[in-house]
Image (tube, rainbow, N blue to C red; front, side):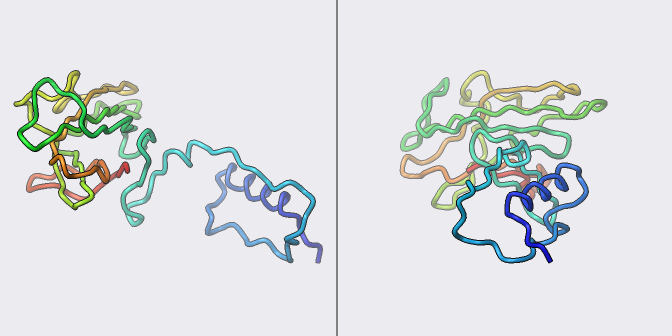
Length: 194
């Protein structure tokens, strides 16, 4: 049996994945030994859109992203561009608190349906000391332009604006969560930026 080189295996694996004929569970493991001392340059891979925007299945749990990455799923494309501790808003926070303005963009990725935006109650900021906070309400007024409280986004259209959270000065941001908005309180997380 002839042993395959690592670049040949990588190329064959990439061809299978690009063709959409399987997933990592379907790809056979390389056969034969791979020499650790090789004069060939290591194979490099260019990050793909899938690397930047994972879309997990329900059994995998929420997508975990970095600030600036885009979540794609449920007909949306959602990006959290920034979340800055101590940012400015149109009014002063309560004593001992600071604002955390969060720049969010939501796009309707469908071609034939208008989707409502996730409302403010669909968002949470989790602190390193395990508090979960929703955005400040319209009084006091958050940073402008605010992400609409709830609106309908036309197909292939987007809306962008600020969510403003108010947290204790001693707290630190752990993550921003997009959660299922349910009648009797927050549902499970859909995507987490941290």
